[in-house]
Image (cartoon, rainbow, N blue to C red; front, side, top):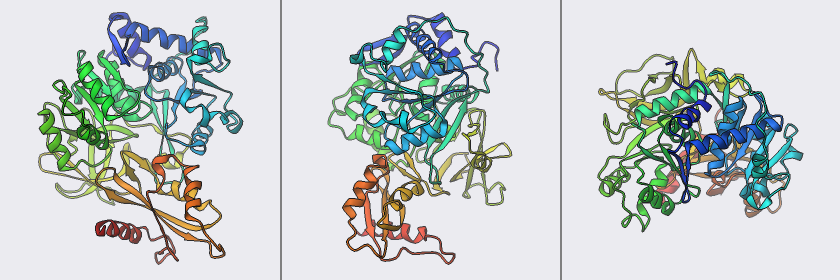
Length: 515
């Protein structure tokens, strides 16, 4: 690491605030925030956190749409060595409670739109001491975020922050029943920012746009942090609707973004798309799901540029990618990002031959340090310095990787990972249900939709599927709720008595093909 390079995330903003304080860091809803103003907001928020007794290593939960506040609150945590815990904005109460309880968060800061679903968290989560709300109408209310920031006094001794200190915990659905807390340090997030600046060719004059939530790895580590590292400007869009994204591309002359394939499809299908000036829009990276040949074709026809598919995960963002200046090959997820090593291995951990399928394993500075308070899962994922993500790919003679399948049972719906066991646990907790099995079914728009197979308890006289759906909807984020439901007399089992997921998966996809 060069001695002049930032060693902690706070240094990203401090250096630009000192060198170019008037340059715009963030564009948001007809407002521009300079690096100097951004730096001041971070310091006020950091002083506020210290005033509440939040210190080095403490966890702070955040639940926000894309707004400037979430960014300067992130950096306020980074400033004092606290650990940010972004809560998925689509979570329901039970899921929010789990993330806060598992991370033992002491403080929760939310946007006003989430107050209804978070108001009971102090009573439900033993570690949680208070909730602050971003709502300017609250004025001097004890929970008003802006009131506390405006009155924060900067007379505290700031903790020393080291590159190896944990910076953030992302909760992501896995193949187990509960989300796992993917933990990144200042070092791993800074490393990824450098990697993506090089791979995505971001320079100080690039205008980037956050087309995914900054509460996710792609929105924060894939777009926002590389933007700030390069000293360029970030366009923040609060409601990620196609029309809003198109307006921002034209207004701010956006050059680079990272989208889910479903979002890009919505953009290209919007009636506004034909009339919008997309002349600046050259580098659209897509990841999180498969890209159809039709999506490639439509993007090329509309913009004159190739779509840039990539591949990554919360544990290591964007580790395979096509490049704006090449090399680039449609239909593949590209080559390893700058500074990343990738191998394909068989079940014995041996490298597979060119063109053969194998599990992707990854090595690089941007890999997570582990799962929060989960040594068993950490040891399974990180083996001898390599990250095993459970994804299967092949590599051609030119070094381009093609994603093939997921080794584990993850279902990816509209770019979001869904662990079927988590959904099944909620369904099975309904007294009328004997057992359930949730599988993914291919879908042209979302990549996959969820089908739930249900077996009722034998002594239930009048089982009510609609009542079960209502129960599930009250306990799971909307995107995790099954799209299709099938009741069976008996769920199929393997010879060892386990649910026969393969048979149900084949059954579900065969039924879709017939419709």
